[in-house]
Image (cartoon, rainbow, N blue to C red):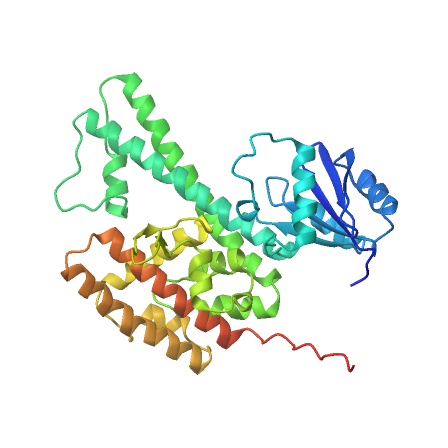
Length: 378
């Protein structure tokens, strides 16, 4: 590594960027603040010696990866840092943009920062799309609660044996009438919102299916392979791929489980071992879809399921074998944990964590192995 290499810390905001430089000789200096505009960033890189001069880092945040892609286009090495893993001093109670930039530069030079994985444009677009569907599903749940609680307040309860939010239930909802015009207007508006949200979910799911064609061939193959698992259909598989990108970046299933925040927290010292609930410090979107998929394993194992067999058509035999093994292990495990009196949410969390191990195994079987670096002859 050249001795003149500079490490640049950027504290990025919507309008401004605070800049600090850590020199190779140990000196750390502030360079002030620039506007968060492409032309200002280009001038900064030119001032620092061009693309080969600095190594840049900034915290992941609401500004996304636009600055990363801009620096990459300029040929500058850049790391996007996980904010929760930045070392901090316990007694430091002063926080400014310039101090944050200095800390980033100093820690980056020392190698104390953890970089996050940065997706390409197609994967980032798919991630935004599946998260838009997630938000719409949350809005749909709230709208359903409004309708059901409105009917409950006015003494309208669905007939016995009728499941909520089925086609038969929709017909029953359409038949409800109120004597007061005011109440009928409220009810009609609530039902109209339900229809709009249902249409939006359908459009977004159709768009997700179309967007899968824009992914790299390896990612498309991974989506199809993950869909061979019970409880993991196309939308769930697309969510996993958009949030994880490549599973090859995780060295072990345990590391992937930690990334999802599904491992138990621990505070052990000496002979005392204390473990608690899951950490929940990882990717919340990933954790949500895994828990949803894990509910499918509460039923008896059924490797001859028609819907699952259709998703496994034309998939590699090793992938189908992993999916079958997952079902034969997780379904009995769910039953055993439930019989021991474990709470359902605790049981499904355990199943979700183990399911993630099978997801990792499928990734290793489908994704191409990275090309090993050939050492330079000395």
